[in-house]
Image (tube, rainbow, N blue to C red; front, side, top):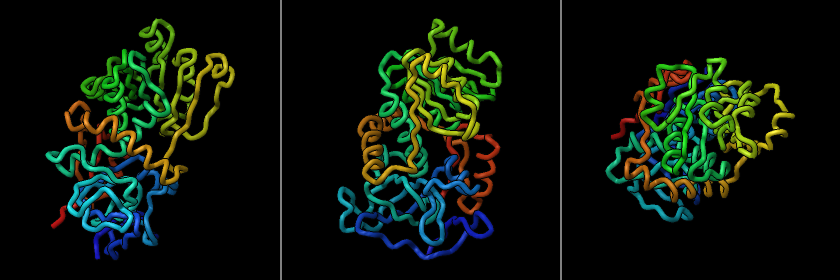
Length: 327
């Protein structure tokens, strides 16, 4: 038996349930930490992101821990390996994960708590900036919604890859020092009516080459105004609304490539490609401390409601982590 956080009839619950039984493509991970992602919160509010595992509906998009069992087809891993995993069912003492979505932790010296803070943020932003955004050294980039763990990682990846100017946005100016610490050259207060003017002034009235948009909603059209002609916008999140008016004329006028991306509709081969690409390009940068992930707070998994509340209130800067004290 094991302890797990499930989405039951009464909502989010702590429960004692049976340990998962792995398939031939799985590894069984003894979980030490899990990050709390925005999609986890939305899952508890009735939206579907594919993070619920099994009949008991175990929550959790990610986990970090040690492999204790390996399926027949799960190549490349050994019992005892310290790993991070993406998928579903991560908020439990044990998680069965498809080996193609499992990666080694960035450094043997890194704690399992710190290691667990990276995975989804790095994969999400690498996929957005590099794979879909086709970012090139010397370009200017805006991370819309930059104070979250994913946003802070986006700022760092952009600078690590050689961005000219990195813009980071937030509605809360008290978060600006943190944005600057993690390589935002220019902080943008998107509650200021003149926020678009500030970006245009800093880019010789051309706009940025690439926008990584975690907000959408009303910002979807506004972003068109500050993206240069022929630039790209990557729709990663919808924190400010899933539907809104859109200026199709401006979109065409500025010849902007607008790409939406999500993990929900990817098959396992596509997920594997996302993981391997990020691993090959950025795992070394994490190990060398060129990419860092601040931990906002550490919450015992039994107090998960506190972690979800903090995310819902948008109080966090960096990663909210759940800790599973094994042993």
